[in-house]
Amino acid sequence: MKAEIITIGTEITIGSTLNTNAYYLAQKLFELGIENHYQTTVDDDAQRLKDVISIALNRADIIITTGGLGPTKDDMTKEVIAEVMGLELEHNPEMEKHIQDMFTRIGRCMSSNNRKQATKPEGSIFIENSVGTAPGIYIYHKEKKIIMLPGPPREMRTMFENHVKDLIQDDYIMLTKSVNTVGIGESSLESRLNELNLAYENINIATFARDGRVEIKLIGKGLSRQEIERDMDEIIARLNVEFREYIYGYDNISLEEVVVNQLMQKGLKIGLCESCTGGLVSSMITRVPGASNVLDRAVVTYSNEAKMEELNVKSSTLKKYGAVSEETAYEMAKGLMEKVNLDLVASITGIAGPTGANENKPVGLVYVCIMSKDRHKVIKLNFNGNRIQIQNRTAINVLDEIRKYCRDFN
Image (cartoon, rainbow, N blue to C red):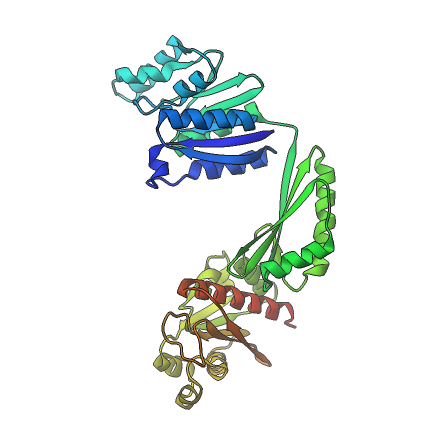
């Protein structure tokens, strides 16, 4: 079945309220195996809402609306839907009493305009709202399912979980799995994916890129969970061979979680000395529970003086090669390694911009050194983008270098 989500409210169209309802419903529909091809947002205008409902009825089997079920003049969802579908509105005395009782329980008087919440299109049924006054409405008419939900997210989510899932549940199954990669561009990855010719009737493959990471998402659709999972496992096995060097995890595990897990498994302690990232790498690592078992310390040495005082970087090195150089990155890591008993050290120095560059050292130039007691590796990186993008991409690449270093650590 195909669904359309319609979120209603001027507060959404003018940007005053974030549209979290559509985000939530799209996820829930996917979990139920229902394809959501369209999401529409419309303001509190009767004619525009009529147009949107008419279009949705022509292209979707299930229409879920949120908003416009309140007692005020601009709450007109059920009135417009009834008009578009040629249904009369009918008043329900039992629902009016239910709403009246809710007001009585909280010690408030029910306004006369709340009576409109006790009306519904003929042939429809109310959906219980256990946390608010506006009931939802369900219509099954001419092989279409229309579900009207209240706009407040807490009311909408409670109603969906408790009642709506059972109304729209289908035998069709949709499953997703993700293969998460780092260190390969989306275009290169997609080109190699095409060469693999992974043609499966019930599996779609898509890629999504962000800050140097690319997610390969597998979307399976069908009636047999066993067949979908079997096909997905075959595809993932082939991806593991083709992209072994770049795969860091599955099903959107974070790169920092993978790194912390690797460090814990190998019993390694790490220290960080960051310049251009200003503590971003250490911040990402400490988001992961258990990070205290592996991260000994992190030092932000932003100025030349800090690099000399905290990490014993030579003034002659800074003068000859500059703060952003292979030599400085090496001495930063070496200084922390000599100062503290650590298994691994990662140092970072670079130009995040927009200032600080020259003709030999552009914005986006970064040097990273990964060092253990018996070996080290200096990596030169170049990034495009603004300051935040460069810092984020640097942090991701540093985590990836730590991951690879851990993988090969004996």
